[in-house]
Image 1 (cartoon, rainbow, N blue to C red):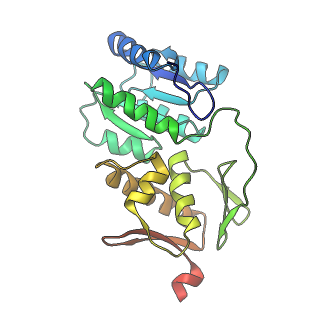
Image 2 (cartoon, helix red, strand yellow):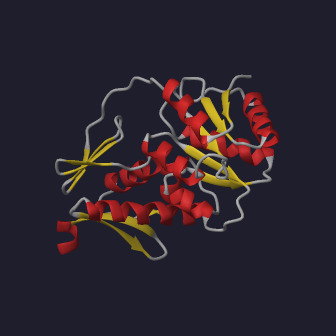
Image 3 (cartoon, rainbow, N blue to C red):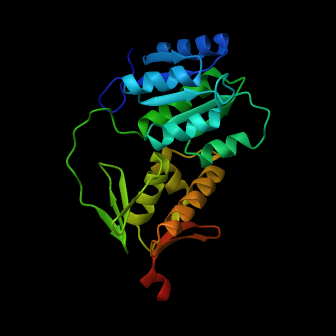
Length: 240
């Protein structure tokens, strides 16, 4: 049965220079009903992204022609969700991938069912390609303005670049401005449900968000509340 993702069929690009890994991931995804394209290096992947629309990129970090972390960052800046699947021996690479905008990291060798679940979870949290929807009212806190349908964030007149996951986390905090949002609720907003590793991922994403908001001179601050979660405070809230 063809899997539907928010009203449309998902197209996934798999990037890996290991033929066996590439074929294995493509077979799993095709069995799950997704449309799959493959690329064996960063150059081919960039070319396909220029020519086609994708709902998800699944990529290795060890590519023959470029740094996989750099490629991950490029795709994330384009608003493309990325799942990194790699056998990298560098312990920090999984965390670095999250800092650079990846939606998740899965180590090789991987369990096929876990791989399928990770992919489905990421796709379920994304808007469908070409979907039409009414523009909801922008969410504003202090000089921060967020437009959900366009996934646009402004501080004053300045637009700032954030990843899809960062947007969902920040939007959840903005909707509850001044109130504590639990880690489980943030995980649900970002990925649909909570897993044990989500806490570390949330910390990494929110730390990066803090830096971006500070750099843009936002008059809001993401505050951690020990044992409870996080909240977004405006300057007025902080003064009170």
